[in-house]
Every structure is written in C-alpha cells, then in structure tokens.
View (tube, one colour):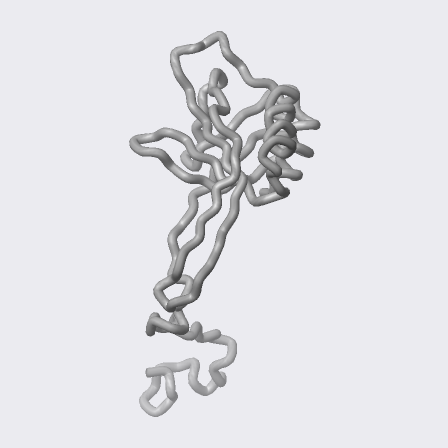
Length: 156
C-alpha cells in the first residue's frame, strides 16, 4: 500500500485500527512514534547493487490508555513528513513491537489497516544456482488412455 493510498483511506475513516496477521487489533491507544523514509542500499548474493526505499510507520502502545490517534491527526503527521522530509509516495512498511520489532507490509480492507507478513527472498536466483520450482503437471493434459494405471499406460 502506497502512502497516497493510506491518506485516501484515512480520509474515509472515523477511527483508525491496525490488525495484526493473527487477527488481533493493535490496542486503540497506540501511538505512531515515527513516520519516515528508510533507504536500503545493498548488494545481493548475485553481485547486483540495489536500492530500496519505503515509507515507515512505527506503532507503539504504552500505558497511556487515554491516548487515541484519529485519522485527521495521522494525515497531518504524514503531510508534515512529506513536507519536512520530502517523503515521496512510497510503499508503506510498518514496525510494531511483538517479541521483537516486526516489520509488516500494509493493506486496507475498507475498515482496518492490515499488517501483513513480509518474507525474505533471494533476489538473484538465476545467478546463484537456486533451482526453479518443480513443473506442475496438469492432469487434464494426460491422454485418457493414460488415466488407468495399467502397465504401459504411462501413469507410472
């Protein structure tokens, strides 16, 4: 989800809710402690230099049960970040404290912002010998005569 999409969703909401991958909601008294840009400049295992930029929200909840962030306030924080930091319309990544700091992608279901899991991946599979996935066989492509497992039918 891009920053512009977050702002659009916020403009339609009365309250903000973030939902974790297990379905539980981040407590309503959460704070957005940071909005920023994270730039990653790296080399992958195949030797290709890459850059990655994301807009970052850091969510935090404490014992401040009287605090509640409303959509208008978060939109103002985002706009301030765009103006002061020159924050572009980037994909949004969310940090939230579980057992350790978790990094999540962000989606919106019309009511809640969904924190979705992120996965690592090899970016240079073609250069470092990672085998392609096994080719899937579509059973409808097998000739009918091969549908029985008689010797010589081709099914085994």
